[in-house]
Image (cartoon, rainbow, N blue to C red; front, side, top):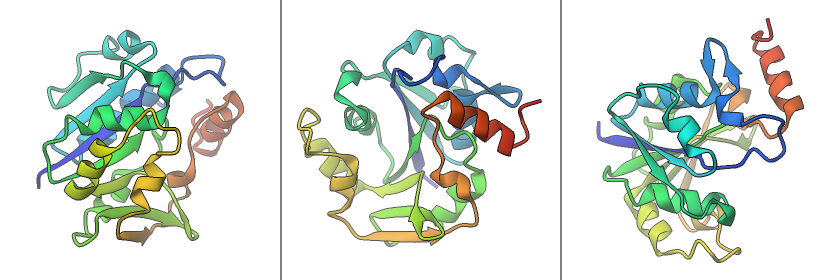
Length: 195
């Protein structure tokens, strides 16, 4: 199955006291866990880095199926990172994964891959959609056509142009990301990782 994944990890973690990707998560870090979960399901993972990129790249000897690409303008926001990652995609379908969702399970990825007839496939918990999302070649082309410097263009606005299918999952972690120290501590507590 020819599937790739983009992991978005170019942010500054400006609302946190530490650099979010390198925060501990279990026996690893947040970014290592996100990448390892993705690489266990897809053929190649493209990690978009920006601020503090060397700290992520030099963290370990990464699997040779992990490619790091630099967003030269991370200040333009998440969509600019999406576009940088999409330029590297060669597979007909690909995931977009948030770099601060280490708790998303492989099971969620595999559930999304069961759907073959939609341009956009998202997991949903109690009727609220989350991440990762699985996208088609048509979406990739549309993303490449968009202007990442136009603040009115977001991934959400582009995805709204396409047929969308939702997969209900019994997994609230698809809705969680980590933007503050409090959210990080709460996540560890709820996952019983706080020691």
